Amino acid sequence: MLQEDFIYVENVFTKKQCKELINEFNKRKKEAIKEQCTNASNNLLTISNFTRVALTPKTKSFDLVHDATKHMTKQWVKYLKKIDSTHSFELEKNLNFVHMYRLMCYEKGGWIHPHIDWGDFTHASCTILLNDNYEGGEFSFFNGKHNVQMKAGQAMIFPANIYWVHEVKEIKKGKRYSTNCFILSLPVEKQEHLCSIASNFKNTKGNDFSLKD
Image (tube, rainbow, N blue to C red; front, side, top):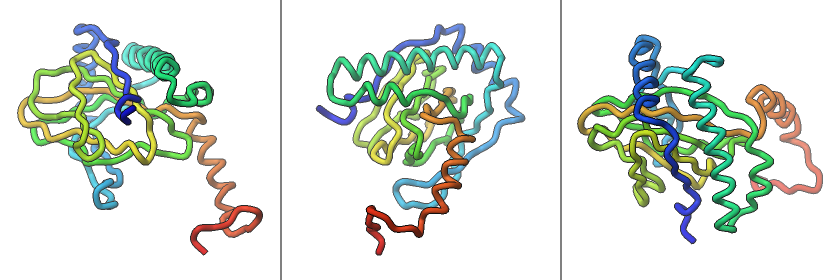
């Protein structure tokens, strides 16, 4: 079985729903910001040149994406159980919360460098493509070793860990619109609390032996 077999893709939005989400981004374009994360190729903090706006809870757009994400999460677990190559029951117990619902736009020349979505409590990433009338912009895994061609309205969910390096290639023509989020076992505020507690034990020794001695 290949690593890419753990990727699940399904249609979730109609053309009308895609258009509504694209229109929301364009209406709120002045709010759009860029973001940065570590480049998996050189370990440098890198700014990507796409822009994003956060979806507002209890709005039509938010509920639309939230419902699609819930659906994709359930379908992914069913798929993983079917291929019988993971501890899907344990995974299912930990897909409980979502972080950062956002609308994204990659204009001509836009891209995101190779990176990971990994975190101590982050187990999956879900992205939904809202249009396909552009050139370039392929969703690529493992430093270009596996590309996924998606159509407008399709969602993709995949594991979020240090092995799942992915990127969006440069847009050659047009604009690429999408929405994405991260699926967690604990809400972010709880994670921050646990991490602060864990930091107090960094220098203690018990039955676990450091690899950095």
